[in-house]
Image 1 (cartoon, rainbow, N blue to C red):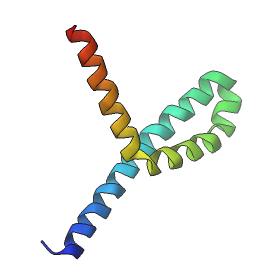
Image 2 (image 1 turned 180 degrees about the horizontal axis):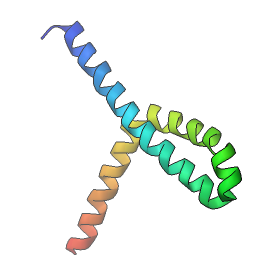
Image 3 (image 1 turned 45 degrees about the vertical axis):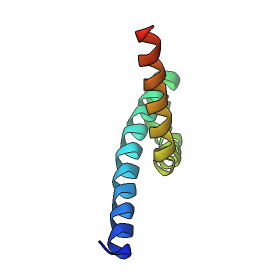
Length: 81
């Protein structure tokens, strides 16, 4: 595999992870806004903080994935003892 092909694969992997993380985070943040601020404000204005949160979380998805794996490891370690 050439260096360009490896970089393209890495870029594609990052893009897919970005999109999956951003969509899940957007939906979760929008639901949080609806629950917290009520239906009218949550639906009407909640999309704005939800999209900002989704973009930030999407950009940081490798770090979030690492934190999730570490948390899962600690949880499993705690359950074993």
